[in-house]
Length: 332
Image (cartoon, rainbow, N blue to C red; front, side, top):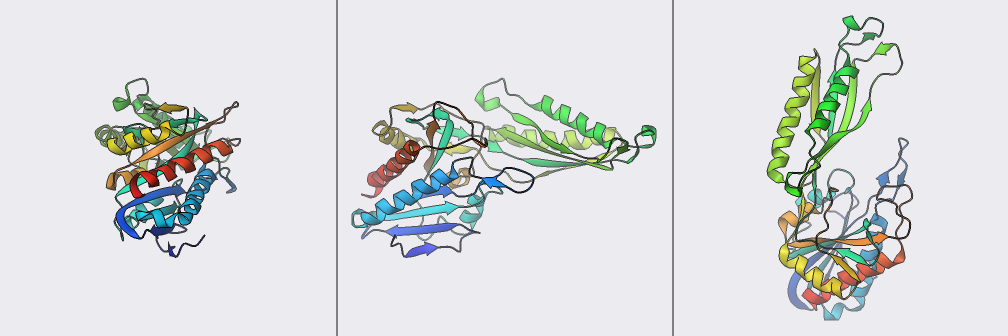
């Protein structure tokens, strides 16, 4: 397209393309995630979350900007980020200087969203997406013949007990500030019906909007896992395998998006929030900005991460227009 300032040495497959105008002004960052979702045990992947649509939006913005570069007052950074579905690529790109040279003043991202109808934008002040702390638990016991359980320490039983107690810690029927989504999502151990295994593995998820509640729940979770296994004669270790803070939009930037969206879509939802998580939260911890949810639900509903999830052309056009209108608001 004619971009000459392209940084491919910021983290993994990440790319930052910068465009500096002829006149001075602020630096505004636009971010697209680029990774797919692992869909099966064989490593098959598919864009079932909309990241392909996000890339299309950002590339469309890039084309619009290069055609109008003489109008730009300041700098635009177009950031293509890997590992949003993995271990927090946003945090790694920030640590490698994504917000520097020049210093970013505002940051924006779009996520196409299956919970919202097409021609709808969700833009909320404050917390819009939850924190996430995925974890893995290893339960150790004493394996042996299933016909002689008295000579074993039953890891399956310990794992089931831990899973039940963790589920009881969840608090989902409450107000947003006290909501805790917590539970086991995977359990594996043993290979046959007459052997008690030495180890059992669990995976789970923990999400909340409240940072104080997040810290306290993590502490209680660790204690519960270790003490339950110990009381039953075994041992258990818990490891958190990544953590995203809550995604919190700044008030001023959310108001600007509300104003822009009024001229682009029919419907604006100013109160929509979700317990899903996003590592764009790391950017919003550093600079003011907003995560903008663009509805992509059509007549037949398929949720994000469903095999049948798709995005039509309309949300892509809406997303591109909103991004370009942000540029016009701050840089033209």
